[in-house]
Amino acid sequence: MPTSFRHRPVLAAALAGAGALMAGAVRAQEAAAPAAAVPAVGPGVVQGVAQGAASTVTQGAAQGAAQGVPDAAAALASLPHDLSPWGMFVTASPVVQAVMVGLALASVVTWTIAIAKTAEVTSAKRKARAALEMLEEARSLSQAAERVGFSQGTAGALVRAVLAETHMSADAPSRDGLMDRAASRLERIEAAAGRRMARGTGILATIGSTGPFIGLFGTVWGIMTSFIGISKAQTTNLAVVAPGIAEALLATAIGLVAAIPAVVVYNACSRAIGGHKAQLTDASAAVLRLLSRDIDRHALPRPHAVQGHAVAGHAVPAHGNSRAAE
Image (cartoon, rainbow, N blue to C red; front, side):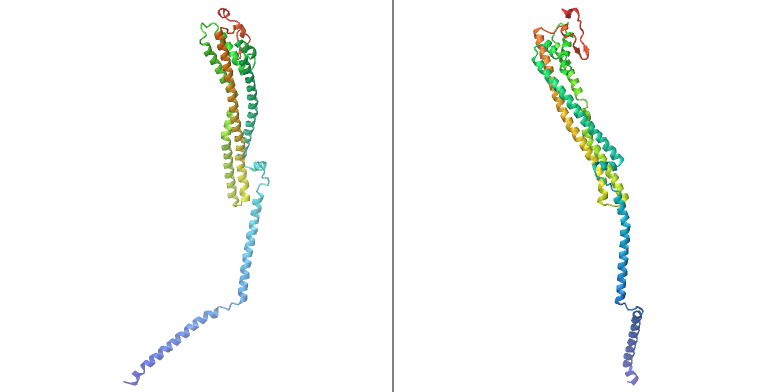
């Protein structure tokens, strides 16, 4: 084999090694170039960067706090300083104020009716009790007329009504229907007395049933107004939210203050009026018993016995026809 062909592998290996050395040198130069471009960072540079960042953060926080202080001051300035009931009423919205005023007037009406009805029912029951005792002691309609007939109470009206019926039935051929006619008169008088005594209690029922709902309307309106104010102030601080809600809840409290006494007074008046009606029923029964005795005794009062007695606002005629006089 010639010498040139024997040395070819050696030459190829040498050429490959030289190429590898050249490629490594190129890569080393490329890596050294960026390192040379970037300056060395020392501890002083790192400390300066940290101080600058801290200064920036501190300055931003100070600016934010300075900006928030006026907003907080404005929010606190808008808060009501007087949280008493009167102070909350003054600072409430006009609708809530109107609700509170209406409920306060309703409470005044309730207590006025309570005082008036207490005096009226007490006086009527006392008169009815005294008249009932006299009717129980009387032995005839004439005696009852002498003792009770001239009184201004309901019992006197009962006696006068029966006397008037006996006078108008004096010429009747039979006394069978006299009791029914007298009982009809007495029932009408009892019903009129009950209606007169119950006058005004319907207002108590209305106040008692509608007062809480009127107060609730004021509360809902006040809370709605408070939430609108919160959205404008763009804050959810409890110190800002609480006063408005407290003002709204005051309307519900006033509604309960007006409604609860109204219900209690209405129930008390109903019981008292029911007791008075029972007294009038007893008085009517006593008068009918006296009439029944006089019918059985054939001793009905003569027309002259009832002269001068007022019957349902009209005087009983002093004269009668010839048959009644007989």
